[in-house]
Length: 275
Image (tube, rainbow, N blue to C red; front, side):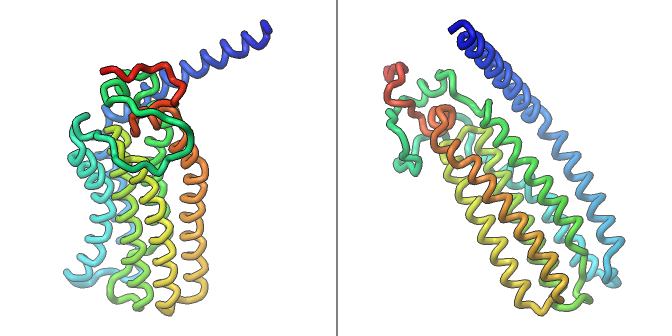
């Protein structure tokens, strides 16, 4: 028994330490968003300039310069636009109303008021939720890095399959970076729709990767290009599936997620419903 007691105390201390560290991490991210945006714009601009300079089809006209600049501009601003839109759409706690239908029906729960939820010890985007939240932002960075490394900058002087590849790869990056940052903003705002939105974004991501593979596969691209693209798209799909396998049970069963985003606690909880 003493050994079990020591283990419990050690685990409780570790848990408290982890929660405090996650609070600091989330607070740091919130304070540094403007700095992150500036660093992001600088890095993507430099990467775009390098890609344009190394283009297999250098621009020789104003229109062709636009054909290279516009896609990279969209890649740069999409995450910022997604975050700003997500933040502006849900201003303050008054926007965090409960939804009438919940897909997370596992377990026995009882509703509590938003005020009680906000006072609950498990309320907030901290702990494992902090890892999920910050992970979405890092996913945008990784996805964009893969795009810059794998996709060459091509103008209309390239073969049709090359132009199709460039624009649809850009479209996939722009759309998914936008929606992942909308989810990031919703998580920080603790918006009840966040779990559903993230599930929608995961499904959208998979469908978009499959759609791009189908379009490029029928564009007449060389076999080696199709193989390289298939590897990239399969990697993206696998990352989504792994993320969903890890985080979906957490989003359904976690007390923190249920308190923060669904305003409910386990039926046996001692939290009072008054107020």
